[in-house]
Length: 273
Image (cartoon, rainbow, N blue to C red; front, side, top):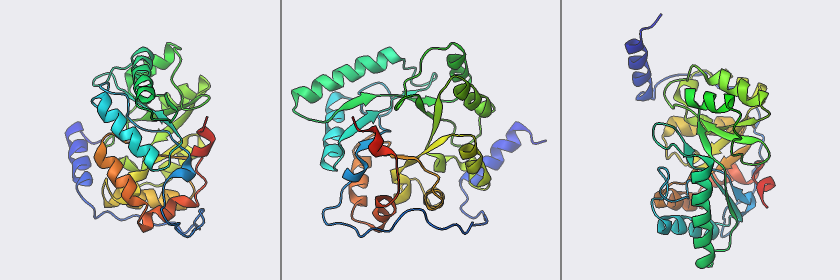
């Protein structure tokens, strides 16, 4: 049995190495290849369901001016609806429904005052840890993307020991977990079956759009493209935090990476109000 230090060393070696091998399955692509239109944008998605636009409550927009700049960029890229998702992470961003709704009200007022005409509502991105388990056990309502679909994330480096328990408790309470950016969890990269296990358990999956651009690294891009080709994503989200994200997302519409999105059956249009 590996010691904690040994586990840490193994994970760090893995994190900085791009030389691992994995067997590639030979499934057919599930999305159509549609010719890229002139003046391409993201309007076919309708809604974005993962972002950090409420100012000053997490690692996203720091000020209301930042928020307005990012949302203007979303409008320019063709989005019609936004569901913004502040982190709820007890050690760093101990948000509650109250802090999120209060921040949303400030944001909505500023949008109205500045004639930015796009509906913005709020859910949350919950970090799976012991505090999240306690929140589930308290039976306090979670903030969903839609109906009882709830966005969750966890450590990028280590699988949390309570992960399966958290998913079970969510489903027992009637929630449908949406796994945020599964392509970014490094410990799943050498065992593709884990992704299928999540799907078999009824979880939804959300692609970070910038993963396909290579923004998070070559291996994450490769995993994202494989998950896309196997039809395992349900939603895609910008996960936008700052202007650099907005610039890359806009630039993607002029590249071959855009083609991977336009024929894929994402559920985002169902979120439009």
